[in-house]
Image (cartoon, rainbow, N blue to C red; front, top):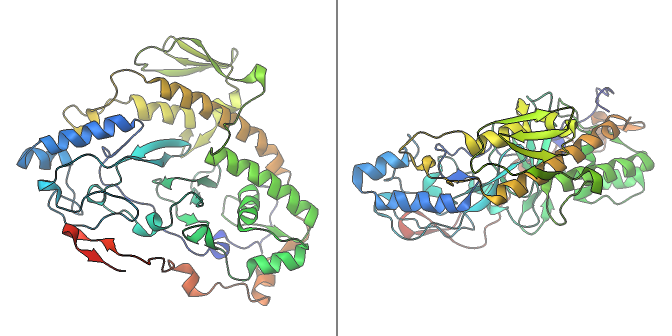
Length: 386
């Protein structure tokens, strides 16, 4: 698929018109792979007074402990200025911190330089966030996640413009045109599945009017989406290929390596096997996913900072997450040849979509939908309706 070029293939930006720049935290300590540590960091911040609290917070031009901001949509954090805040830590929420690396975030607007409230308003159990990674030639051009993505710098394209899985973020008329040409009734999720399976590194999406080819691509794309989102049943490799801990991991491993002949992941003296070479070699964001995932949990933070509050030993949950990540990467790598073999015939190109009135998408479809039917709490407890 990647070697096939149809110059008339429409850009993803035209097919899914609404996109949002990724959030920018401005400080690292409100996120981490361990939710309990985030609550401990919050407690340490609030126990500090005056200048000490200010220093621990790590102020930027956008956020200081004296900044007044409203509450994040859908969250229950306070809105008084942090310099005088008290009370428990807001419950951390799951986020996609890096490619295939699910971590936790304290969902408090006062901690985040640029939170992108429009993303929080449409984040629910129905939503799928598509993350562009166009500058990563070795990795997948798109990532998909059910969690709020924090990856930079690629654009984020939610599948739905409103909560509850309503108003798909698709060019108006696209579904009807595909239905007429294919003799099928593709759902928004089907169109996303096809996109995930066929998107090219330049973020163009070849479309087809061949119903058999479409069905094969959609089936493959659904599998890719399921593996990326990791919701529902846990993915598994066949019995003899499932990775297990063969030698206990140390209480705090410091190094990671790979024995290609033995297909074994090495964490100091700890051993996990079998680990297929395709899983170890899987790259995204300019490096091996497994190495980046490990580094996010073992790199020593600066002493005296809130980020230095972290587990004293390697939690068992991290081992379970690592075993699942190895499985996901191995299964995704197995699908790549099938994606490359999807040679698009009978293409539906940009010119056809223009003649049909599907493109260009109206300007309104590139802006957030008005989704608010209730008040949101603004700074210092004042309510606003946007």
